Each structure stands twice: as structure tokens, then as C-alpha cells.
Image (tube, rainbow, N blue to C red; front, side, top):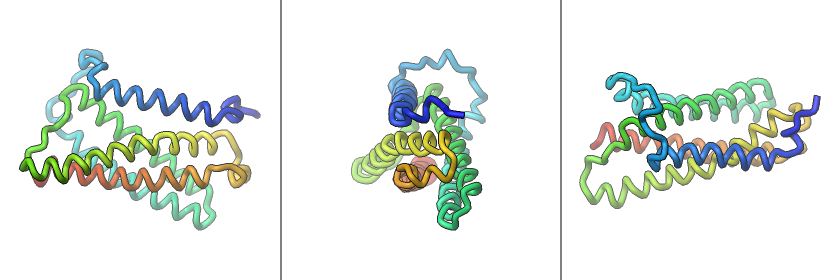
Length: 186
């Protein structure tokens, strides 16, 4: 069976990336009103950053296990780990955006010098990598979803997947660093 997206993976990647990033920027920019979301308890909302740190750590593990699986030629395990990684990314993003829409960002409580010279550059790089990885992730996933595994070796799936994995790993690790700075050090 031929899937229509198969012949238009770059276009589908662009559309999926644009929609995902528009949702994120809409939430960050306050375009999505908090009144459209049901409000969880304060305890649940307060737990989201801690949950997201755990999700990020788990995603780092699943990405590394997926990378190892494909290096060993185990396509089935690779697919399972990478789909799990994507699911974790979606869960992280949904929880993050939900909290952001309801209570906005957490203010940095540390000294101005740490804020200016460490926290802001660190956060900026984390955000930039998270944004840049989105099209690579969608491209690799869409190629994998529209082709049998043996055909993927004749596409850019491995290259896009490698870039996506590296960017994901660094972004998730830096996200944990942001979490530590915001919720544990300051």
C-alpha cells in the first residue's frame, strides 16, 4: 500500500514542523488563553517541572538505547526506542506547555551575574537546539513511517536521525541543567 505522504516527506516535514512550532510559540507568546484548558490542582502543576526532568532523563536513555540498537542491526528495537523517545518528547512538551499556559515561566532566583552569564546563554542554547531538532525528528520519523526498513538504507533517514538524536540528547541534557538551576540551585 502506498501512503501519499511517502512522496512528499519534505513537505510533510515542513508542515508538521510549522504546526508544532506555531503551537509552541503560541503558548510561549500567550496566544493560547488559559481559559481553554482545564486547571489541574496546584500540586499537579507544581509537580510538572520535576516530572519533565524525569521524562527528559528517560528520553536520554531511550535515545541512546535506540542508537545502540540500530548500531547492532536491531531495527525492531531501534524503532521501539525511537518511538518511545518521540512519545516522551510529546509528553514533555504537552506538560511543559500546559504549565506554561496556566502559570507562565518560572523566574530565575539566582544572582544577576549567574542569570546573565550562565542561565540565559544556557537556556538560549537549549531552546535553539530544541527548535532546530524538530524538522530532523519529523523527517526521520516520516521516512520511517512511510517505508519498509530495508528501503530506509537508501534514504537520508540515518543522517537526519543522527542529527536529530544528537540535538535531542544535548537539548534534553541542557533542559535538565535548566531544571537544576531553577529548582535546586536557585
